[in-house]
Amino acid sequence: METNCSPVELPNNTEFEEDSDYRDFEGTDVKDMRLEAEAVVNDVLFAVSNMFVSKTLPCAEDVAYINVETRERNRYCLELSEAGLRVVAYDFDQADDRLQTPYHETVYSLLDSLSPAYREVFGNALLQRLEALKKDSQL
Image 1 (cartoon, rainbow, N blue to C red):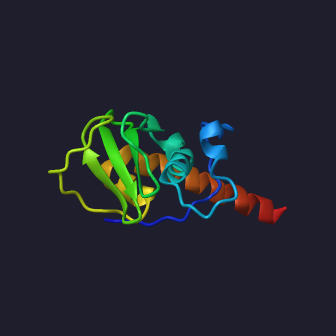
Image 2: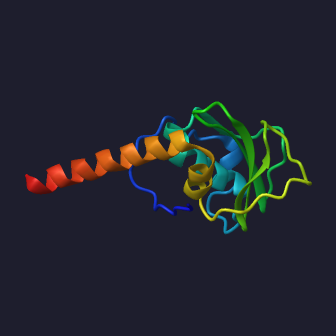
């Protein structure tokens, strides 16, 4: 089952750092996939064991690579491009051109297909957020 979830305010485990690599892109219309990849990581890091943008594989305007370790301890290298996200290897910092995996529109859909534990953690966080909104509206 493929699920597309819209991002909601959920806890983040990291803070965005002002890094000189990113300052060059402020105020430009260039869509840098490294920035997109960092945003993807920040959105779902709370629901996986480890996730970070690859510093080994090249990032460009049109592609970036993200390493993710699920709560089940499975490792993947993901490719992020305009086509979406897909698994390109079953280990960090690898890209196997022979691997033909489907693209997913969102990181939520991709992780939902890879990790039952991600699905549970994300679902619980969403439920807690909805319960908090319900409680706030009753005050």
